[in-house]
Length: 287
Image (cartoon, rainbow, N blue to C red; front, side, top):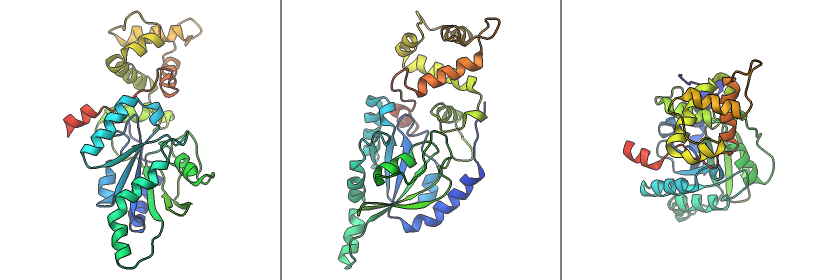
């Protein structure tokens, strides 16, 4: 299955981001802690050029904590500042302003040396759809300014938001890229809810998820679906899960669409625990 999704408003958003870049001091790149590489837009390097960046691994509560810690070490080793946060619960957000001030210290020192008065940091938040940008903004601003929702594509315009006296945020719509060179990236984005389910083949996504769990979290797979062992073939595995969860049609046959929906829902609702789908060792090999 080939996954592509690039609505017209995203092309417009890319142009607007490029135009507004000169107005900000720093980029807050929001990624999904479960898939920090797959949810990082490769167009960003081209768009932001030399602009300072702070990487925010959101939804850290849904990711494998040990793997998230490994990602933070990976970024540090590659001279990138990153923080693990949970914008829904508000955890880790107090670190953001301090980290931005640390990154921008040379710039603001130069401004002070020229006699310029200190001002709030101006930051642009960029991230793919459904990664939690609006929730983060509302948490930082301590009010419901940005629209939120668990459907990708809620934010479709840009707005400035003041966060106390130290920070001003420029929100932007979620931007995906026109083509996924690696289809596994598409599967991971689909599995974590970054792409609308209505345009996906959920059976393919569920098959990918089951194989990933078999390779990386086999005990969780066997415990959740009461398996004595994991079948080699996917069909018996689907049949077992569908029967166990009552995903049956009128004649007692397994409804594979409903079974796929059940598997994906179980993963998104953390019924199989906190899972990370991007692994630092894989990225290190690619690097």
